[in-house]
Length: 395
Image (cartoon, rainbow, N blue to C red):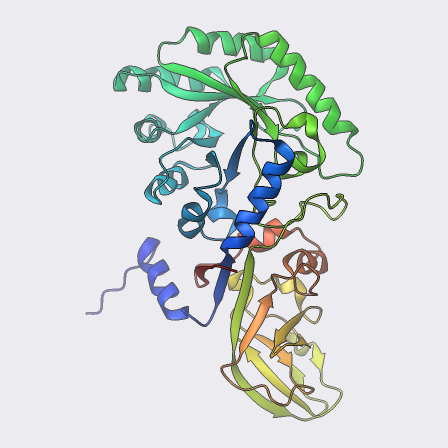
């Protein structure tokens, strides 16, 4: 009997091996280094840079990105415990922050075990309620040493964190706890990527009020700036910033002033799997939504929405073959895209196809594709699937 194992790393390894070379994300080490240097230029030498590598480093590949970033950043931040442990496994020995609150990490009855794993690995956890303090107390007593924690304040994003008026009492509870070592306090700015920064400024005012009420924050790591706030809101930088998308070379919003010279890190390539001629009047793809208005030469490309290439780009985007931009024809499938090669007679099976360009001015750059798809660059890069081979290149 044939035994088939589904799930987890077995499937991931199998798929990556099967697609190796056919669907490839090239990650530029020099662009990463340049982007961190640009961030360092605006925040100064005394402000820590905490690189956000949640969601598999925004889809770029945590296992290959962490070793690259390690020489240039001060900390890493993630959301989930397994990701924090993966950062350790990638060789990072410095500070790591998890954004999700300690008590919410896992199903009932599992949280203490998960937090113990993090504490043993030297990972800093987030606290935003009494439940977190109680949990960390138990973990600290069990381990015989306090668990390092940052206190998160909800200053108006109304998502996670303790509300400002309740923060001083929670901070006092943390300071009295033998099982917790409070080392930081932070908030999240909701709209620093907008032209109108009034709500971001209002959040910072709330944050400052909370900090004043907390007292004794001189020795704490204080942070409020994501990528957008790091770039556009100097008052948010404090003594640490948490850039994510900016490190990967994109602006969080097209509205933002391009004050940093950010360079995209990711170039995605696929291959021409098939090339053939079709007659005028033929239709293509699911739903037969595209009709060729001339005798045409078409190619099938090895990428689809299962790999994170949005179906919303059907009949809208271009890809590059042999230096020429060719249009997508019809609906994007799970694994394939059809392109029109009629004006590129020299295209052949096996040719490399540039799906996402590292050139920000290209019509198929990450930011421009996101705009075409009616979404944000985060969604496309985070959606890159397991079948994409990720490799670091120097340029």
